[in-house]
Picture 1: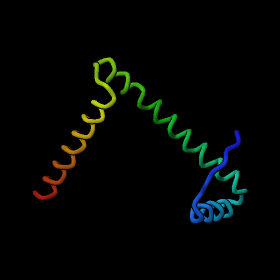
Picture 2 (picture 1 turned 90 degrees about the horizontal axis):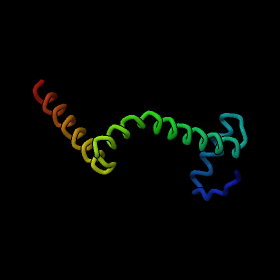
Picture 3 (picture 1 turned 180 degrees about the vertical axis):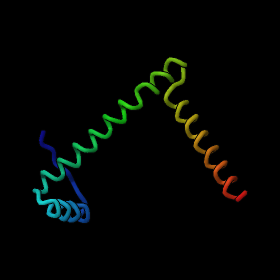
Picture 4 (picture 1 turned 90 degrees about the vertical axis):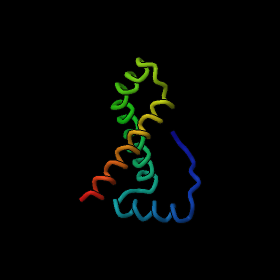
Length: 87
């Protein structure tokens, strides 16, 4: 697949610098970055699949799951803050 990207001047300079540092053409380096991110996303989807299936089986939608995770994260953050103050 061939694509055209519009980069800021800063991003273009950094891409060129990083490609040179790795000793590869800019096009190859940009392609490797995209492939790496796509592979990470696919791996994360695979890891999360059983969790998503469990939520779906329990009748919990994606938005509701996000709210539950956010609440749990906030609760954990609060309890860590309280524990730090007690020290």
